[in-house]
Length: 387
Image (tube, rainbow, N blue to C red; front, side, top):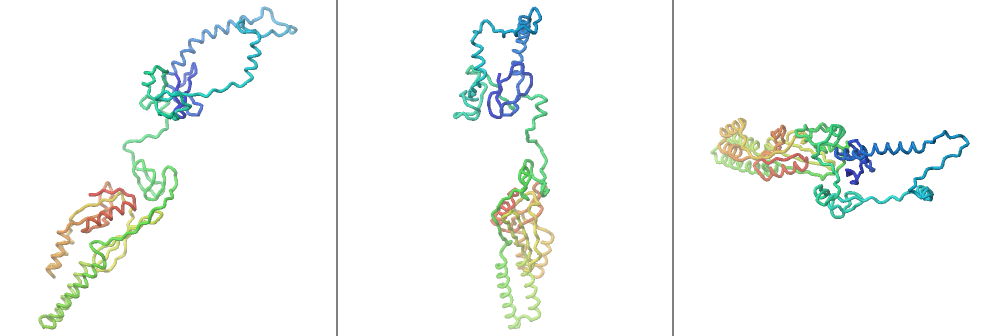
């Protein structure tokens, strides 16, 4: 029973008496030989061996001379079997000098049994079904199956990679970033784990800027309008004599400080990516309209991106509301509405299986939350989870 080569798809004949569990095809691929094929190949050899020995012994006895030949005796003529004509020796010598014509070998297709030069070149189909071959009454051809059990020797020599359930994370040899199991390319530095080199890739540049709960110019415009209104009312009261100048000055400065804190305290998010894929996330806080030192965040030091809605309240917020209510009822009510009542949306960078580790955005706009999350995912390639 022949064997189909796994490389080229041709039939590999099994010689009589072949007892090994593997055989090499003409293309160089080593194919496994099933036990049934080895037994079938060994059976004819075992039956023919005694007959071959008897035939060889008979020929030796017939050719042995009765007296030892002398040096002067001519050489014996070659023995020609009686069934072969006398002139057949010349024809045999001439035919042996010629090279035998190599016939083009063709093999039946695995599925439709159409004769093709090699497997994979059938114009109609490319497959094999043992049941169809048996139904048509043709010679069955053994084809290696995944479900067929392998011997101990096959298991030791098989080097095919298989997926392992519960595998550990892969560590990038370039930047030591932990990647999910089965990763091929590092999302942090672009190192290809199979090619063992950094892949050169051109990225689309990205540059976006967001300011939480209103832009810098809008906040300044509201601040100067409030200052103009409070100043005009205070000056009018001093001129009419309803208020003293010292009291007006203290009240005006207190309101100015509260307005500067309420309107001038916010953060600015600056996200950039260059053509080489380097991502920079810079967050700058402003307190009373004065910019603080910017902070650069390493995006690839986190595992993912998460967004959602929440209403955070801290003891510091409660203390600020109490302070504003003492000095003015209206600023305290505004702080209560904005901090305690208003729903806040956030975008966070996560670690440890989705736990928020760094808040990128926290504001009142759901549209801005989604825009920041989507743009951050596009720039960094980190997985995004919407809460």
